[in-house]
Image (cartoon, rainbow, N blue to C red; front, side, top):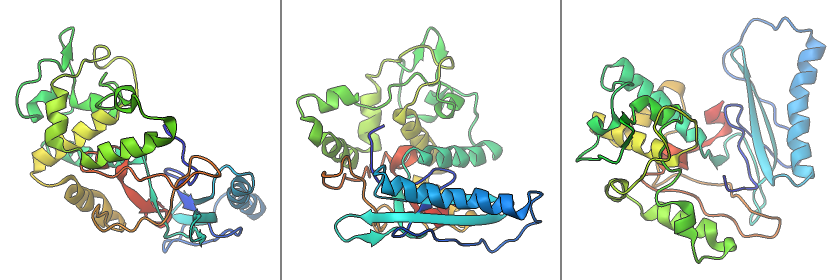
Length: 287
C-alpha cells in the first residue's frame, strides 16, 4: 500500500485536534467495567498519548482514534488534516478509509446472502455478463466467497501497477493511479477482465486484491439493480447513523502526504474503486 501521512485508524478509527486530545461519549451507556477506575483511565489516556506522540515524531500530520467498548465511544484527535490551511483534525474530519472499504462491502454481501440473492459457494461468473473462461484454473472457478476471504487468485489491480506506472517517475505514481481510477468504469473493467490470468487456483492462498473487491461491488450492483452507493446507504449508513457517502459531493477535508515536503496526494476516487478502497468517513461515522 502506498504510504500517506494523514491516517484514520481502521475499526478503531480516530482523528485529532492541534496537540490536544478530544474526549467524547456515545449516547448509549453501559455497565461499569470490571476494571478498576484507575486502570480504565490509564488505558484510555494511552490512546490520547499515542495520537500526540505520532504527530510529534513526524509519523503523521494528523490522525483520529475512536475506542469503542461496551457501548461507549471515546475519541482522540491530534494534529492537522491539511497543511495548506492548518485545519485541526476533529471527530468530523473526513478521511479516505482505504481498504477498510472492503469490510463494508463484505457486510453488504452478507445481507445479500442472508436474503438468498447471492450464493457464497457460486461461481462468480454466474453474476457477470458474458463469458469468462479465464476465471478458472485447474478446474477450480472463483467462488463468491473467494472475493471476500482474499483467496480469489486475481491480480491486485487491473491493469497491473507495474504496467500502469511504466515510464513514469516515482514522484508521479500516485497521480497516474488516481487518474486511472477516476477514469475507469465497470464496462472497461469487465472488458479488461477477459484478459486476466489467475495467479493460482482460487481458494488456496490469501493475497490482497483490489480487483476482487471491485468485482464484488459490480456483482452487488447487478444483483440488486442499484448503484453500489445506494446499497451502502441502505445496509450500512442508515442503520448505523453514518453520514451518507456521496462521491460527487463528499467534503474531503484531510490530505495525505508522502513526505514532509511533498504536495498533498490525490484521492483515489472513481466508480469502480468505491467497494475496494475509495470510501470516506469521519471517525465519528466509523465509531
